[in-house]
Length: 239
Image (cartoon, rainbow, N blue to C red; front, side):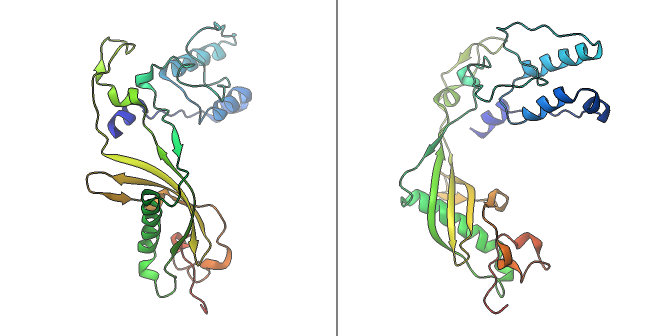
């Protein structure tokens, strides 16, 4: 599944010279506003055409029914795969399903995996940093991959419009998101958690854990010694 997602989400970057930013501020602002929008290679092609017309000081006339939108114009916030002419088997916009039961075994295991990862990260400073425990799971969700993504096998044509949907991809992992409160720090954390079916293990990367409330003076004992621990360390009383 990871490979299929990577195939559908290639990396692409633009670097604009300062002269362009000054000369075309509206277009550059539009481009920045599209950073988190759904885009396709056809949009990139349309952007290159726009750049050519800008150099000639001409207006680029566009049809109302084309599949491409230049990144130098504002892409609608509600654009979806159908709007972008992306066939279902190429759509990577998998929905998150909120889990109402935050006390279920799977959610608690995911939450405790986050706690364990934090405690392992602060282990070398245990003489000054308290060991954290789970106080509450505030919110949880699970990523649900689309059926068309799992069934995609290969293209039937050269353009990618027709697909062979005969594959039966078996999931080997699930991805959860949890928002938790820790004790005794009252720290609020959000994290993505991967559940490995094969090994029955919940895995968390420390870089995937975000603290969303301020730590204030809680980390004063570690502030200068190890700045990376600031959002995780709750200094023991008296330090």
